[in-house]
Image (cartoon, rainbow, N blue to C red):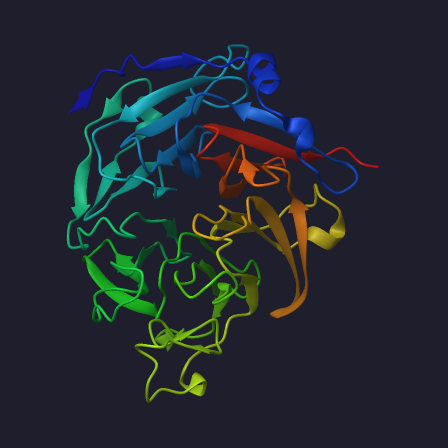
Length: 368
């Protein structure tokens, strides 16, 4: 059964949205440009692209999931302005979304919803079905980030229900869900709160960001970029943080050598969220197969850090460099935007969601 298109449709105006935001404060490497791609998406978080070109966007605070059509995206005449449609509302922190084989999947805290054949039936919106309902219902770090792996398994992080605690084997991990039989497999353990991951384009290995614990001061422990080499590896939480910081409460009797150290220490409180490997040739060669990370920014540091996009260049699985790619959302101690997720488009441009400004940016390369 399907339901008619919800009538929350907002018309996008590129010039108006761009003029309202201080995009001239954003600095990028030579040859790159940034523009507002979609406006009017309150608290925009994870993004997913449909097979036919629709853009789907989750949110954390609004309880809504959005669909974007028009303006060159699928769903309506490309000559029309972009349209933002509320696909569903009243959900609990539906930040994490994924698209797979025609269906949209949404994480509603304790369950995974599926909106079957959503592009095929557009503008009718299908009633969601619950495909898995055995996730914890804790709100603290309960919002999710979703992606399907090459085997069609849904990858789901389960955050710690606290700042620092030993909550047991149900929490602080990244797991794989086989939707054909609803069985789960733990992939990475000791992960405090991962809100971003992707698979290496060559090796297929899972790389993920993790947010470090709070209330140990301004400068420790670092947030992390990690690589999963084999299922079952433990990354330290709550015993060790960032590879070498023993937790004052839970680290007694444990050694750093028991756990996998991060590939990159990103700095304390920068709050890395969405990340993606770059798979296109649109950007200069140095960026191919590199990692772009959205840093949401600090909330409890005496001076703010983060609020930017960083680039991690690899040779194989060796980190060659970690550079600031896009910055300027933080001006002094005031932030007018907070990057939340990054997604590559088919034309090679990057989309960056901003859950504070309520927009999605497009970063593209024009050449020097």
